Amino acid sequence: MEEKIQAIYQAVIQGAMADTSGLVQEAIDAGLEADLILKEGLIAPMSEIGQKFEAGEVYVPEMLISAKSMKFGLELLRPHLVAADVQPLGKVIIGTVQGDLHDIGKNLVGMMMEGAGFDVIDMGVDVKPEEIIEAIKEHKPNIVAMSALLTTTMGNMKTAITMMKDAGVNKGISVMIGGAPVTQDYADEIGADGFGIDASQAANLAKKLVE
Amino acid sequence: MSNIWTSRKRIEAALNHQEADRVPLDLSITLNAYIRLREYLGLPAEEKIQADRFFEVQPSHDLLEVLGVDVTYVRLGKSRNWSPPSPLEDGTVLDAWGVGRKLVELPGGSYLNEVSYCPLEGLDPREIDLDSYPWPDPHDPGFTDGLEEETRMLYEKTDLALMGRFGGPVMELGTYLRGFEGWLMDLILYPDFTKGMLNRIADIQIALDEVGIRAAGKYLSIFKLSGEDLGTQTNTLFSYQVWQDLIYPILARRWKAARKALDKYGGSHVKLMLHSDGAFRPFIPDIIAAGVQILDPIQSNCPGMELAGLKKDFGDDLVFHGSLDTQYYLPRGSVQEVIVETKRCIDELGSGGGLILGPSHFIQPDVPPENIVAMCETVREYGKY
Image 1 (cartoon, rainbow over the protein chains, first blue to last red):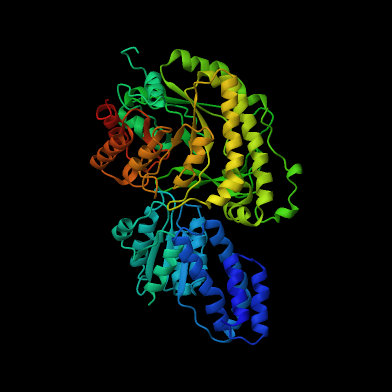
Image 2: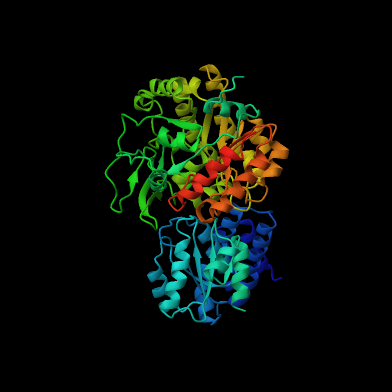
């Protein structure tokens, strides 16, 4: 692998935070293609971190730091990706459902999806179904991802799915759900297209859903 | 031992790993679920119900008696020298630590008080001066106003076992001060800062534990070391190395201080209970080594927290408190499913004592009263030794 790309890769793995953007700048200055920097320098290490997380070799803090480091690099790279017309893997709208302010899991999933090459629109917490529908109309995503920590709020995932259907905006969109009390059975019960038990598996599932 | 099993004797037998007449029962519940449960049981509506900031209520003794619940709680009073400042624009109210919470409406018209302002969030730890932070005063006389007398009354006038909880959490307060993400990243990026902050918090929680124990410790059966959530749904929240280098020494200091205070103030019989959600089995041997005797609430659907395995490996050293799932069975399971699951908890954890059965999280407003009653009835009937 090109040395400058290798340096970015290592910076993301080690969680070098803001240093990552300097290394991405060096790679751009050296004339490396934005697409290559993205795939080999930013996406590849996040995939490795995801695998290590699933295997229990790294934990939430390390994953967060790697994801933030990736984001530092990605922000710097973004205008170059636009200029080179590099298309994202797909577009995801993500949020924690109405009545629920818990966002650590949702944030991790969002970052892992970004780290897998998706364009992620984060709607934050306490997101009403109406707001999801508006966002679908505006952004035309491939995936809507919803999170809930509380058993009392997870029913709002079902409400949102029903309202999406009623509003006729569900065509061609996959719905993913997650959060501590959420299971595959629950996803099946409410008609969601997928469930990820953790952030890494959610990102892998998102990739499958847009294949 | 006497043939008449009072709640307190039943709990103390379980705590000493002995079988009583039946498995003892505990119940923690939030406001709307409590109101609905009283209604369902045909108990009179109560005019004024005190709820804490998690909307957890202390059930009245008539309800405890009807259901066969064996435990009641003792807490510190309200501070006298500190009162909350005016709410922020979005309704956020700051507590004595400077942490803000606001009411969030849940489906069905109930509420939760959720953290909405973290005073040290987003700041560079290298620029945070922990010395000048306005820490709360653990020696506020309001905390122990009437505590000794109230606890003694409960001890003398009821047969219930008393569980005290005085100081609050250490780690969780760190997350409130720094924000959850910030705090998690600090563990790796700024371990010395994190140690400094957590030690400050621990000093205050230790002092709160001590003032409460001095006043009321001798009347208790269980002392709850607040809550330190060490696990996620799938794994420990952080690596064993972070636990060993950073977190464990601070928490162990706090737990040992509680033990020392109990021994000093007539509570050497009192057992120490730690609350942690999630999957944290790799930390359990260290937790036992630091003097914890009861583990709460046991989320058996998390990897490594399977009931039979915990009983087999740690059942000689630990009493289990909780264990009935609140993520599926209590809120969404049928009465029949709740009965079967409650029996499973009893079968897998109950032999030889060592189990106080209850919900694995305080009961939220989405739990039907039928399911709560089914849990309690199953413990009273099937839980007979």
